[in-house]
Length: 119
Length: 110
Image (cartoon, rainbow over all chains, first blue to last red; front, side):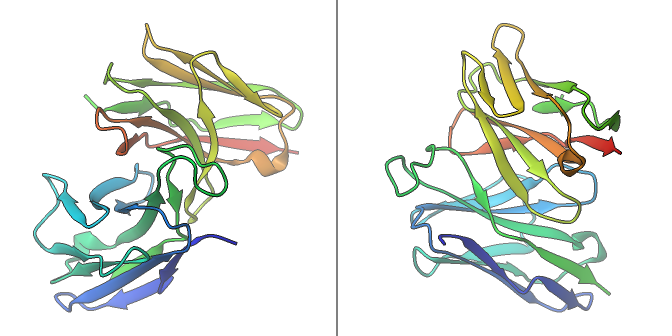
């Protein structure tokens, strides 16, 4: 089945120790997104890639970076995690219409998330 | 003002009941509307897209009111498995980016 995969599912890191979260997709979607979600809050968009073009949200801290080496993979790097960065990190994808499954152009499909704990 | 606002609930309903709730959005240029479902500590999953004429998917009915800028979701014949948080999602002016509400929690009791 086509899907969005995130690894690891749970990540514990120390305050200030860099961490990388990964996302891969078999949907062949051209847009990939990273969201941060804290308890009882809406998912907050950090940035997204439209094909190879990186788009940062204005309020995303510089501490958060991303890489997309190819269509299938996208990484979220947190350079110096703080206690306030503990959250669920969600990767999502969306693609143009006409792909297998007839996805609506702007529907987003989420991976299972990585729950980050900062100690 | 938040881009998407929802009543957080919780809406506590017995099995078999009908439950309905709305969300409002601030961007009149929004073109795409969705309801997502999110279970505790899980990822959001697309429940249904919302079309201008309103649409139904089994026990779920969604309505869009562009003039008043709100979207509604109605669940008929509630099941225990419908217990979840329902996220109202609206496209931004740049359509492939979405704005999420914080969700409405529904609890269906036996």
